[in-house]
Image (cartoon, rainbow over all chains, first blue to last red; front, side, top):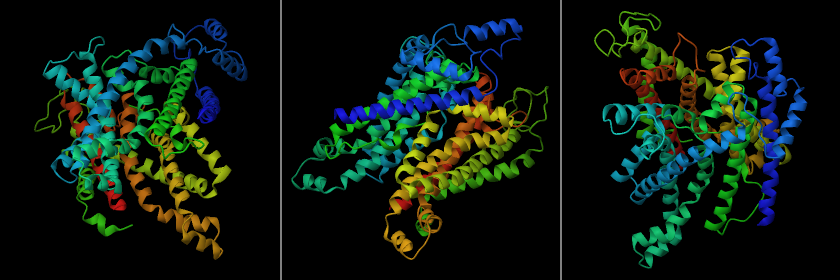
Length: 318
Length: 270
């Protein structure tokens, strides 16, 4: 067990280093710099700015300096915001994480229920209703859903404040907008995996010995059919907890998601690198956690080498 | 793959019907209204839907029905071209990786992993700057993201299929790796490849809409659905129809391609 975790941690470090290097190279090959989009600054000012942030050093030196800082846990100063990258993450991540946690819990509750209801009586009306709902979740992009929610709840019905952050009322619309897709996905995963499990011999045995349908479902079927959902939770948690640009912009949520975009748009080098590292590390950690949970849920799974392809999933764009 | 089974699948039929309708709208729509997509009429801005302008007008007085139909051309083209790029890149890369196996496979897959962890916006902006903004850059940027999905899937298929008897038989009679890959492995992975292609189309349209929301999509006066929707979002309180129509069409497109993809998948599994 300890060896497995250790091995994974080493692979993670190696992947992180590769990601940092490639991002660094691409980042510096994009024309323009953090100060080039400002109102035309006098050359002397630019020169001072570049010297202040060591942007006039050769790239290899900047790269080594960055790695040195990173080893000490310092992600450097942001070029655009008057804060360090560490401060931005520690201030904004809790907001996104709160929103993300509620979103994940909500998606799990609704998605799992829909999936179980659908699989319990396949090809009957509850199944079709669940399928229909999840298809809608798949079909509406998050920014459109956000717009429609805003129109309905804030402008038409006046039930909820349009765009603010503070109380629980401000959580409702962002959570709904964020959880549509994961809910649909979980419902589908759960349905197909529960159907698969219900076909197994041991379920027939359980039924033959007279166990009630609820007993079969809760004592035998549910635990085994949760595996695919658990796999999906790794990338989902990583994606949702680090925030979404669209939803945060539309609902004025002071989260981390917006910085993923503004960092790139502003060529805010340290912010780009810092967030990339943060997200990649978070994702890998979640995938490691998922593999460990797997062990608890399914004793048949042996500890083997790498976690396969799931380590590198794109930061969800929404 | 069993095409007969697909014929009876209601989901695929419904999806294809919607796609056909959307294609008709894209081809014929702009001719129906008698307006152009860039003609401005500053006396008739933000009109609600009515007889003269079926979907109303936008903040510059342009006919939204015509713009939405043109948007259909652009958005559908983005979906189809991205899917085609992914097909070529993903099948080649994934096929070679899966068939070679071992060390080569590991290095190639690690590379895929690294590429997918790099912020997508970084290379979109890089491409936009290098190629100049426009449709071509959008195609390539989206292709650069989604080919990874295809490569992973093809590699998995090839890994599983290459142990089959017919591959051993082909090798025994002296077929080279390229022949086995192109004549035996890829055709047998055809079903899942088709499913992935179908599902990439709505994803690409979706992502392009997201890029437009950031102002990185196709450039004015051209308008994809994403551009129209994000323009509509701005005037949401007073002119909600400016969001509703593009939103409806994007959602219908996503729905249709998802129905087809899921339907094919279902037919393959049963």
